[in-house]
Image (cartoon, rainbow, N blue to C red; front, side):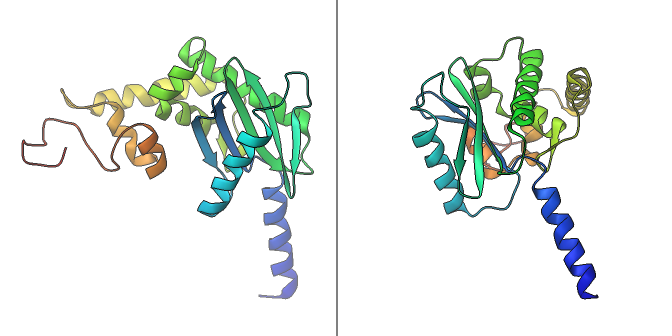
Length: 205
């Protein structure tokens, strides 16, 4: 492949990476992580450092302070709703006002589904929150801005799961295959676990 093609491809990939969210974290005032999703490639140590930085740099800030905190090669853009901080990591060159509007759009979608979302909704229905996030954002880029279309897709997915679920099976467990191990642990499940009646007394439950 010619060098110019390699350079052009690298520039295109870099441009795509600089157009969307790098990660999103929902954290309570007590520093509890209620949702976290990384759209770019980070090591586990880098993810832990980012979460520590959010707790140290965002939570102590006064309500009237700026909603933007620069951290090296990226910046935190956040909004607080009641007891939850919605924190998004974006490249330095991305427009912060657009990110703030995207955060609010995500919150409106959560409100529309949960009928005024609260922290407990995220604790007990994390998979539903992730479904809404993935319906709106692909690779960190906003792909669906219509709240009505997002909620319509979620309802259709739920109806499909209900049709495929056998009596007595855990409906939520049907969605586990789309979650990472960390997200399944946040839901209080063992990865790969199924709670249907097929698991016998001596089988894995």
